[in-house]
Length: 294
Image 1 (tube, rainbow, N blue to C red):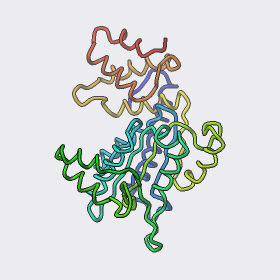
Image 2: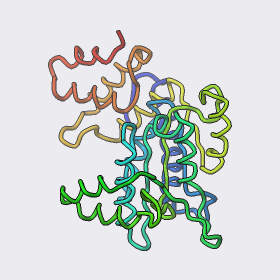
Image 3: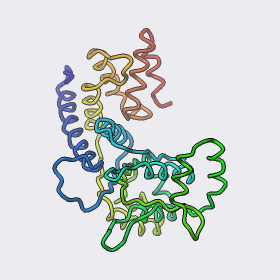
Image 4: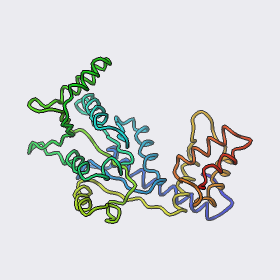
């Protein structure tokens, strides 16, 4: 672990390790790779927290370490793109396999519209085989044009996947979700009514939180900086080139007094600063100043 000349920073990086350990335990639980669970009340998880607390970084790192079969749904994806990704991934599952669907920045994907919220609430409903209850992701739109275009593009497996989930007496597709585990990452605090907009949205969000494991991360400046310092201390931002401990200390010491001036304080910012240090060794500080507001 990096050692600073300032005891406050050393305490922060030590606390950052504890923060990372706790978050990783929660993420392994959410991703279904925890080794100490006998049963689980629900498979799905919502991890909430402001930008820069390590939600996406930690989830992707644990997914890659465990070599989990997953897809990511991100803002800006069209309903047909989401449908195709889900259909293909679920179709490829073997009998004993499970798919993780990581929904990044879900504030826009799920929590910004009442209709979408209810759609995903039904998609993430509980499975009860004894009662014949299997939730589905439904896209009630005629797929003929899409399938024809995919056939012309030679995407035969995707065509087969979509056709296997077509409704016999209706338009669209309906994809079973009983082998899917959702991990939803969002910025807004779903337990804060002020962040949920209309009364209609506020009334709809409670059952969504109830159906999922919900965990809210909230870090102050020292905790967030300490977490970033710990992560940078124990990893390298890039495989192609490494930072020395002295370079890491310089980068983190530069960030600390400028915390409020930085546009963002996520691990992505650390990577940008590290890239400048590697690519522009003679003038990286000039580049760093471009990350400041104003």
